[in-house]
Length: 289
Image (cartoon, rainbow, N blue to C red; front, side, top):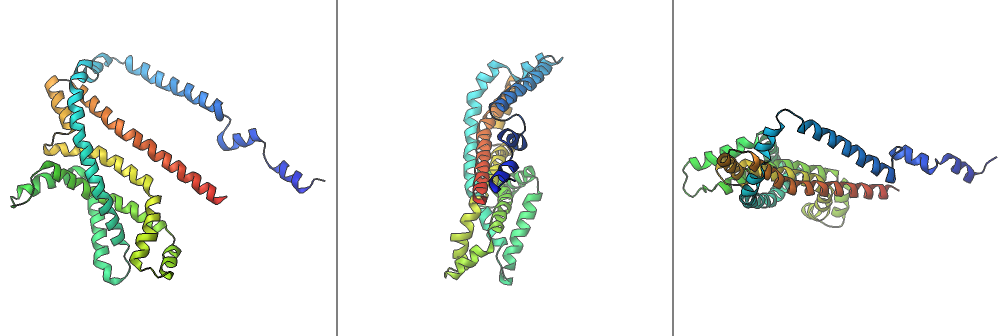
């Protein structure tokens, strides 16, 4: 007859069996080796298929010309700074406008019905419109009215278009974060004498923002890429500069230079998002123990 301790040991799977149950047979250093070998094999096979394609030489000459790359890179890099500046300005206003829309949509009571209605209509409209259409209408339509005092700067209208579009997406992210905070949090704050606004400001919103940082960063990765749409208004940003350089050289290599610049910015952000998600998952697992 076995005691409780013995029974618990028999019921508990061994270390190797537990590793197979949780992560399969390839875990630890063996898993790393297998991952490296399989990745090299897949990439090598894909590379062989590409370089042995009938049109590879023409493709390489049109997209990977080192001379064209060296001559266009400084100009594309300088124009890319316009994309970065546009992204930073738009991100600042998107964070504020998105939060305001989320708060407006969650205001209780019949007196706030117009605010909730405005937030719902705004989100539905700008989430449903194609980004390129909003850029065209604002960038060409509003200045074309000829109203005195209305800006005609392409940078201004490009940033405004991005703010209007992404505020709708970000407001839904904020709203999901606010809804995830348990109502008892606000009730406890109100019981301490805080007003509804103070409870929202000091208790609900800080918790909501911490929970939605990863999806917010995902939206900002999309925002960074969509700054290229503003080149349609005539603003010389990275993609527009690559277009000019490609037309001058009769070669598509400047587009590759532009793609590399966007990847150098977006890939670290993506990995940072993954790290935040993993850290939040570890915290949740630690709290559940």
